[in-house]
Length: 134
Image (cartoon, rainbow, N blue to C red; front, side, top):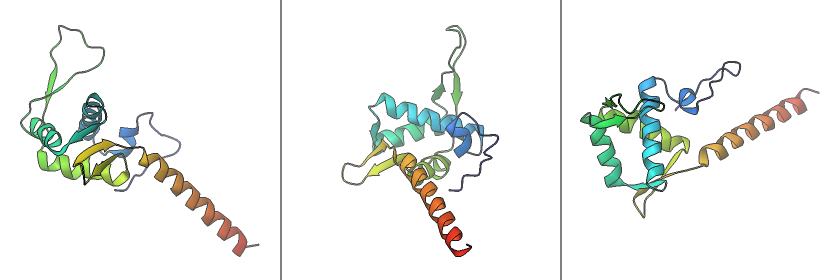
C-alpha cells in the first residue's frame, strides 16, 4: 500500500493518513476498537464474524459525545472489500499481524519500527549522495 502525505498538512489522526475514504477510516477504527476489547487479539472466526456483521449492516457505530437518547448509526461495508481494503493493508503495513500457528490476528507495533527503518534508509541514502558529491 502506498501512503501519500503532505508534511505541512499532516492530520492528527493516523487513519486519515493511511486510508483514502472516511468509511475506510471508520471501519479500521472499529476493527482496532473491537480487537482492543478482546485484549488486542482475535481469532479467524471472530474476524470473520466482524466482517459478516459489517457486510450485513449489523455493525453499530457509537459516536463519542452523543446523547444517550440519540440513535446509534448502523454501518455497512462489503466483506470482500473489508479484507482487500482494510485488513490486508493493515497487515502489510504492520498495524496488525497474523499468527499462523495460533490462527489469530493481533494488534502490532511493527508499523512504528518499519517507519523508523524507512527513515534510517533515507539517512543512509543522504550519506551516500554526500560521499559521491564532495
